[in-house]
Length: 329
Image 1 (cartoon, rainbow, N blue to C red):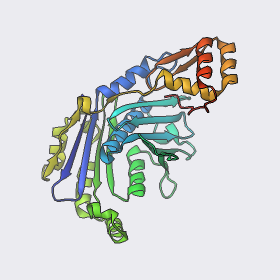
Image 2 (image 1 turned 135 degrees about the vertical axis):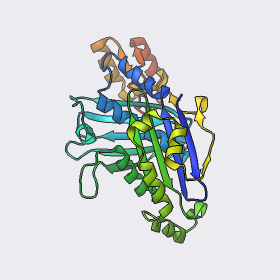
Image 3 (image 1 turned 90 degrees about the horizontal axis):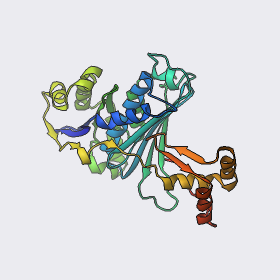
């Protein structure tokens, strides 16, 4: 069963989250493998997407955001886009668009960053937006300060979180065809809630970046976790092996209905809005060519079909209402 474990290091400004996705992850893979037009992911794509799902789940659990957290990687390689989305109740889904051949041991740059133009984007989309409110999005490149290509997703996300939150973060990620897992260790603001109170507290927090000894010690321990250990060992064993000298406060694990699970938000209604956004002329053109409008969800594989009568009803019901978002899923 997929699970999330959150913990604090007693008396230290450090917190942690450990996630193991089993059934939630394998359902994503099974749905992809059963899709006739695409088939199963090549192993390097599977590993990358699994790390993305684990990372997105870690970040959602860490920030407690009331909305969708969407992690995207896109660039100029054979993987044009990879997406992992996690809702506040930990319903999750993921997909990748592959348009070229994938080498058996392809690296991150070979998948999405061939010409060093690849990017990573994290979007926070509030569940209840205020009028005019737009989702927050942060984007970072897939290269370092010297434009050197970064080959580990964990390093890309550590850089993102240091920029966006001014907090040191250590990530360890791993995935195969059975498990997607991750460990996050993060330094807490030294002033807690007071960090929001003024520039002095904020400056004090920034002064701790890269120098807090407690965080540095724990980060070194976390970084010693090997890929195979993360994929094969249970949570209790991992925490005991890494932090046996540290006092931890553990929180109730999130699993089952309260934990991570596959969930897709696509629906016939949302696809209808997409068709409305295309416009009546475009919809009629598709009908004339194919006899129906067929839309498939890339996340769950559901197929939605609309004949001429269905399409006519969509535009008749819309009347003079402006087209809605063209979002499908």
